[in-house]
Image (cartoon, rainbow, N blue to C red):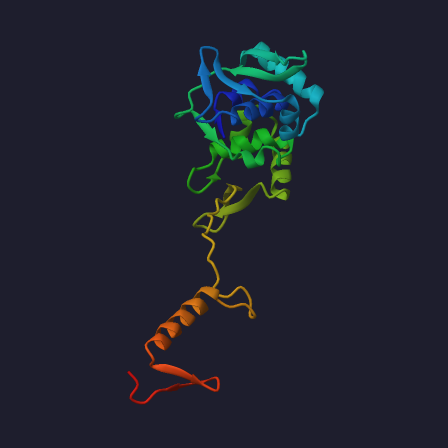
Length: 241
């Protein structure tokens, strides 16, 4: 999913608002309809609560706050013939996702704890896109986030225990330690290999097509009177034609 970089400044005071805003933008793809109000999405509040690992009342409260802050520009619900209310339809404010964004795999949306998701996305923003490494110190992270060094250090230790990031100390030419190097854990992309049909399914089975072709070959030979049968044993007719 693509997260607009302005989310890190607008929703850094509330982790619930940040993760719900990211969950809404994770639903936007190339087939999402774009209107004058923004991106049109339809999602249940239970689905958002399940993806973000938060309670349903918290989701309702956070959605109301996002509507006040302008991220949700319009919402409505439809009714069926009986009169029951359906799923909410939201209009999400449009942000440019061509360059000013941070890519985070949606796989980690429901697997990273809520209080650590903001820092995980921030580390993905700071990391290099090729090596997934970043070199910022605690003083730099404090200047970026506004949190205390002790709190940032506790978050980093928890993320190392959860294997979300890896920490390595970098040595200088003199042999002493310099700044730390952090590597962000990412989800490796696999490939689907084509299924190879085995020649024999097991030791007892056989290739029926090959046997049929072999019997058809012998039938053609028998029709030409080259082979014959005598007491169940094949033999060659001498001078046959």
